[in-house]
Each structure stands twice: as structure tokens, then as C-alpha cells.
Length: 108
Image (cartoon, rainbow, N blue to C red):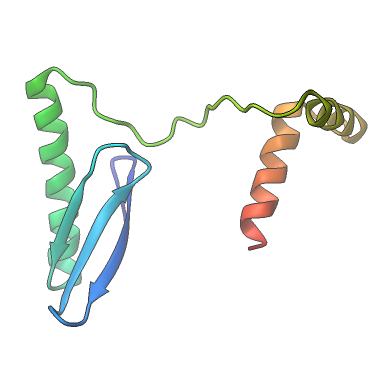
């Protein structure tokens, strides 16, 4: 499920016969539940709205889902090899790394 840039993973508890979800990609714990898909979706939307309102009230910036930017620490030799490979492939290092990550994620 996605709402306002936040994404959640959903599970079902067969014992309690309830769906529950948690927002991923943030450091804050944001969880919700519902007995039907409609209740689950409404609960997800409500918890995000409440979270954003609470952050505003407390003067805190909401924890945003991943921005798409991160620093990566690797060995100088691996860095050099990646730069060379990107140049050979005729793309930027950023594009090359993005393609490598995407390929790895989609082949698992």
C-alpha cells in the first residue's frame, strides 16, 4: 500500500483474523490494522495523517521515505573498477551503480 509517499507492508494474522501493516523506509514506527481491506486502507491513511499532524504539532520534520540519495563506502579498488566499468559502458558511475542495484534486486 502507498499513500502520500509512504509505503506499507501488510500481513494477515489468521488467529485474530485481522490485517496489520507497518510503514517501511522510515525510522519512526508507524503501524495500523483493519479487519477488511477497506478498514486497513482507511487505517493506513488515518495513521499517516495523524503522524504528519503530530510531527507538525511537535515542530518535528516527518521522517520521509528514502530520498534516493545515499553515501556508499567501498574499497578504493572496487571504486576504481566500478568507475572503469561505467566509462567502458558509456554511462555515469551513478547510472552504472543504479543499474547494478536494480538488476540485483529484480533477479532475487
